[in-house]
Length: 148
Image 1 (cartoon, one colour):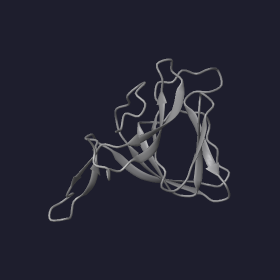
Image 2 (spheres, rainbow, N blue to C red):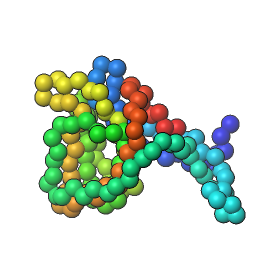
Image 3 (spheres, rainbow, N blue to C red):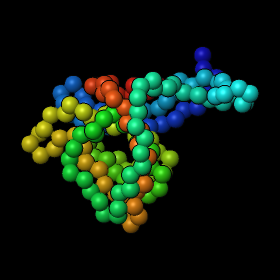
C-alpha cells in the first residue's frame, strides 16, 4: 500500500503505437520512495531514475515558430521553463503545455501517412517558449506511461 502523502506527478507521453502512429496520453509518476538524496539531508520523495547516458540542453522557440513534422531525435524529457508550446501527434491530438508541465517525447519509428510522420510542435502566444530537454539513447515502442 502506498503512503497517502505519496506524490502523483502528471506528464504527457508522446509515443509510437504498434501501427507506427504517434499518440499522446496523460500519465502520472507515482512510484516514489521517501529517502535522503544525500545524508544528512532530510528525507524527501524520490522517483525512479534512468541509468543511461543523457544530454541536457535548453532551447528557445521564438514567438510564431512552428516546426515541420518530425520524430524526436532521441527519447527526451521536455520541461517548459517559460512561455507555452504545443505538440500535435499523428492521431490529431494537440496538447498545449506551459511552465512546470512535463512531456516525454518518444515517437521514433513512426510510419508516414503521406503528410505526417512523428509530430509537429510550435509556440503558443506572443512569448518565446524556453524548454529544457534531457535526451536519452534508447527508445521503447508502444509502451505508453512507462515512467511510474
